[in-house]
Amino acid sequence: MSTPPLRKDAAQNRQRIIEVARRYVDEGRLLQLNDVARTASIGVATVYRHFPTPEALLETVALPAVEALVRRAEHALAGDDAWTALRDFLAAAIEVLLTDPALPPVFAAATDALEHTGDLKRGLASAFAELLARAHTAGVIDPGVTEADMIPLLCGIAYAANIQSALAPAERAALGLRYLDLLLTGLHRT
Amino acid sequence: MSTPPLRKDAAQNRQRIIEVARRYVDEGRLLQLNDVARTASIGVATVYRHFPTPEALLETVALPAVEALVRRAEHALAGDDAWTALRDFLAAAIEVLLTDPALPPVFAAATDALEHTGDLKRGLASAFAELLARAHTAGVIDPGVTEADMIPLLCGIAYAANIQSALAPAERAALGLRYLDLLLTGLHRT
DNA sequence: CCGTAAGTGGATGGGTCATCCGTTTCAACG
DNA sequence: CGTTGAAACGGATGACCCATCCACTTACGG
Image 1: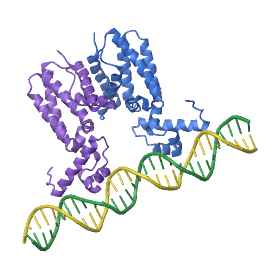
Image 2: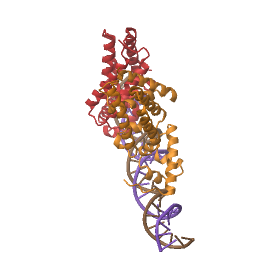
Image 3: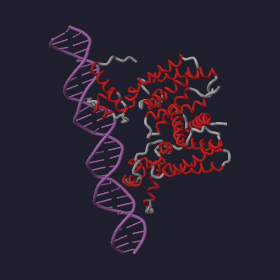
Image 4: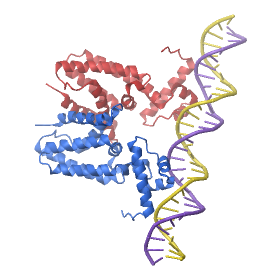
């Protein structure tokens, strides 16, 4: 579990790799480790040492966004209306999911297949479970729905909105929110 | 548009390729043209001539299932209750989408990117549009929802159910149906 | 300043992809 | 039937990508 602190140059390289990868993701290019290495003017082996697979790199690129989402969830927990809190958080999740191309694959992957994000995703899941639990006890949501359903469903919505590849990102985000609304209408109880 | 009829041996090879590819799809192996060729004991070039890309091959493999679905839609149009017809058809669609691994990619692709399936998908879309239109005039469904929404949403549901890679196919199908129900509850009007 | 462990780079073997072209097979016609 | 031209075939091949290995360099504690 101990992570011996990285040497200065290593940390620098690592950072540089992440930056380049982030640019790749944003531009929709797929992450090829060799390619990233060349673009970053860094040896291939260095990249492979830091990130054994493209997924690992992607995961690291996605990290800040996931963290932000966790904070968002905790913030939502501070709200007082169970339904509103849940809905707002879900909307935020969809929005970021459709805005940052790094996120969908990370969320779609099995929780424990990820090195770093695993804990975060678990944290997110539990914060989210709490939001759901509140909604359940408040009786404002279909009692049969668990957080084990919601994460895939969110991914599904993001996926559906993303299929419309002709649309601009902003339009896709709007579409995603609309789809979320549709789903939530089905889940809402009064 | 004219398709000069295939020579006997060519047709035979083509068939053989499709059969092998179907096996690949069913076993979840990804379609690699070279690989398929070797398995089918057929020259690589032959495979490439018949199917320039893996997508083209996949499309052809999926064809019968798509045709079946079109028939199903037309059959549904014979029913008299708009809502039931729509719901039953959607359930059938989800079921086959989750049962046949060849279908999701084909449906997710842009309609006009496909060679053969394009027409079929258009036919499906129009039969489906008819089902929706009936539901609309009967006032039993959210008026804002179009068939341009429904296909992606279906794919999204299939996607969500498929993420649960730990589940057996049958369980995933059941899950998909449940998700569909959730969505439909959101769309239903009375 | 030196020793050592951590870090680096890129050459390279292994693998996949898809094209090209010399050969074979079909089937139409005399 | 036998001939012939077009259609189809096959696999060798060059281009490309992936990821490992190891000889070299660099940071940094003593």
